[in-house]
Amino acid sequence: MRHLMSPLDFSVEELDQLLNLAADIEANPRKYAHTCDDKRLATLFYEPSTRTRLSFEAAMMNLGGKVLGFSDEKSSSATKGESVADTIRVTSCYADICAMRHPKEGAPLVASMASSIPVINAGDGGHQHPTQTLTDLLTIRSLKGHFDNLTIGLCGDLKFGRTVHSLIEALVRYSNVKFILISPEELRVPSYIREDVLKKKHIAYKEVERLEDALPELDILYMTRVQKERFFNEEDYVRMKDFYILDRAKMALAKEDMYILHPLPRVNEISVEVDSDPRAAYFKQAQYGVYVRMALILTLLEVKLP
Ligand code: NCD
Image 1 (cartoon, rainbow, N blue to C red):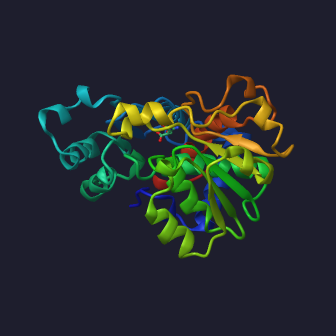
Image 2: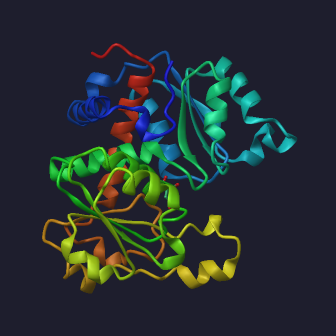
């Protein structure tokens, strides 16, 4: 039985297969409509979510399966003091696969060790968010056709942004991918990403503060929200929250084929006037999240493909 805790749980070849399956699902959705008729997905969300939970549920429904779960830990027995290990042990009796989001780093991993069904990490604190990365990879591949030789700019809260950590870990496995890490000093990537991932693998990267300086070089700009819920005090958040605002004037500095991705939700970091720019790919990206999660459910459940 396989779980998904980090994008590195799949080899590059396996990821390729998964993205190919997602692309086939996009092209031929009807073919897959009954592949999970007798299956159930549990969504155990101890932290707020719109896209991740709804796209998981839509994914399972599109496959003919059913969904159950909770979207707020206050409505679960966590408030009575139940451990995630006990919760998943019980959930294993009711469902065939589980997606779990938790504010504590490592909670889905603890769950996976007590589980008799596949557990998918749907975001653990400021750590990892592998299914967002699968979504991001499918989006980039659909827009650019490949990952090799791309210059990727990641902008905003690179410290607490779990989607950023997972995406960097996944992309360093392709050849000649360069990173420009755009953040205020206080929100730079954690040192384990800089030292153990980027430096150790000799990846070309630079860290800059001004978005304008990076924009002309980029093939992809990955914008992120300042992660309000991970700040220790409100003042620091207020000081940081509008550090970057991508608007039409700044987009004039970017290449004609530089696409903007954002895991969403967006707050102020992308002005709504940018939404109509043909390079704005973030809503399309949310749609890709359904196809890739369908592919992931089929893969982890080892469903015989039609
Ligand atoms: C992201 C997350 O939860 O980490 N959202 C998502 O899953 N699409 C990004 C964010 O909340 O800023």
